[in-house]
Every structure is written in C-alpha cells, then in structure tokens.
Amino acid sequence: MPQTHHAQHTITVAAPARTVYGIVEDAASWPRVFPPSVHVERTPVNEGEEIIRIWATANGEVKNWTSRRRLDPVGLRIAFRQEVSQHPVASMGGDWLITPLTEASCEVVLNHDFTAVDDDPEHVSWITRAMDRNSAAELETLKATAEQAGRLPELLLSFEDELRIAGSAADVHEFVWRADRWEERLPHVARVELTEPSQHTQVLEMDTKAKDGSQHTTRSIRVSFAPRRIVYKQLLVPALMTAHTGEWLLREEGGVTTATSRHTVVLKPSAVTEVLGARATVADARELVRGALSANSLTTLRHAKEFAERRGVRAAN
Image (cartoon, rainbow, N blue to C red):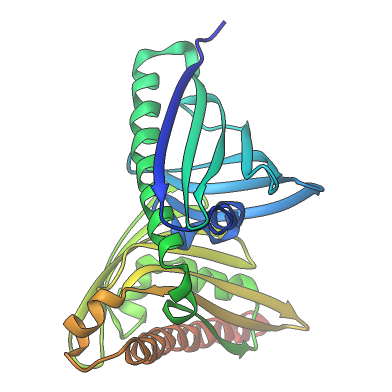
C-alpha cells in the first residue's frame, strides 16, 4: 500500500471569509490570482460539484491534471481530489477551509494528501517541494487579492480585438502558434526563445519593441486547443502589471475566420508613478496598457490574415 503523505498550509487574511471563499471558488480566475496557475477549464457535474482541468507550473515544469471539486458555500469549504494526475504524483486531494475570525478577517487552511509514483523518495521530495512552493505562493496572493478586492474594478482590465480573415482557422492558428517565426514575421518582436515541453504546450520568451523604442521582455506559457483556441499566461510581465492572461479565439464559418485576441490584465498600482511619472494615475496606466497590447495584437492578427489569405489563394490555384 503506497504511503500517504499530508501537508497543511495556513494564512490569516484581513478580508471577509465570503470574499476569500469567492476567490477560491472561482477557479476560472485563478490564472490572474495564483502565480502557478496558467489555465483552468471548468465543467459542472451537478449542484455543488464540478470537474476542473488545470495547467500550472510545478518546480519550473508545466503540468496539467484533472480534479473533481465539491463546493460548500455554507461551510466555507472546498474539497478536491485529482482524477487524472501527472507523474510523479500518483494521487492527490485535500481541501480549502475558510474560518471567519471577525466580520472582516478569516483564517485559510489549505490541506493536501498525496501518494507518489512507486513510493520513490525522490518523487516524494519533488512533490513536497512543489506543493510547499505553490501553496505558499497561492496563499500569499489570495491574501493580497482579497485584501484589495475593493480596488479590483479599478485594477482589472479586460478587452478584446477582432479581425475577419478570408482564410481557414487552421492557417491562422499555425501563424499564431509558430511563435518561433515571429522575429522574422512581426515588426514589434525583437527576440524569441521557444521551447515545447509537450505537443500542445509552449514556453515562450520574447523581447517586444514599444513605440518609444524601449523593449520589454515577457515569458509566457501557452496551451493550444487547435485549431480554435490558444490560451496563455505571462509569467514575466512588464512593470505596470501583476498579471496578464489572454487567448486567441478562432471561429470559422463559410471559409471566413473571425480571429479574436482577448486580454485580462491586473495593474500594479505601486508601479504607476514609478513608470509613468509622479502625476500619473491608474487610469493613465489602463489607457497605456490597453493601447500597447491592442497595437501588438492587431499587428499580429493583420500578419496572420496576410499569411492565411495568401496560403488560401495558393491552395485554390
């Protein structure tokens, strides 16, 4: 019988328990809240129960697994159990338990139990390191997010850009996915370093040129749901942001593809005056970030349009 290992991580949060519970319950928002989380897909099963598929980093590696969650908003508890784990994890489960301390504060306890493949001590050590690192990061950012929840409407920025392309979704997907060619294909990309941990997962680092001549280095994890969708999360973001996630959506109908670039950004208020000057505001940062990201997205979409439409003409002839 494999040995079951247990761990517990705790933090006190100066925010109402229900605010904290809401953040943990909304797994789709985890990529903009929790540093290890890259992407989450939620599938309701029945009342109070759901399946979530998670892509996340663990000890610097990209992993994905599937868990079943049971939600208890009355008891402020969320239990989870992995149904499909990834090596070296053989099994894992646990729960989030949120206990009110006052009307404006609570204690959060994150429990885990796990078994390792072959009971290998090295596997146990790897899982323990990843679990301790990720749990600490999640609890710290959960605390920060809950304690400034009142500022979220000001700091959260979501928007999209769209372009119609007389070409196939598969060809547009190929252009966007082949980021290793962006340095030669896109004028705002100065350098690209791309690795592919698995067939549908990439780690993309690139230097992007701004209109003022400056360059920004970003590092992202991207996941492909070919040929209709690519999602990503930036692990290394520009100074004005604490989080940036996004997706490329491709809807093909009658030989025409509607390509949409979506962005979700959380701004870093403490960096606004440092980056933009003493009199700058969060509103100024919102405008700057949206303009820069939209410009880059639309540039990419226009080049993808040219690529896909040119290929379509060649295929027709």
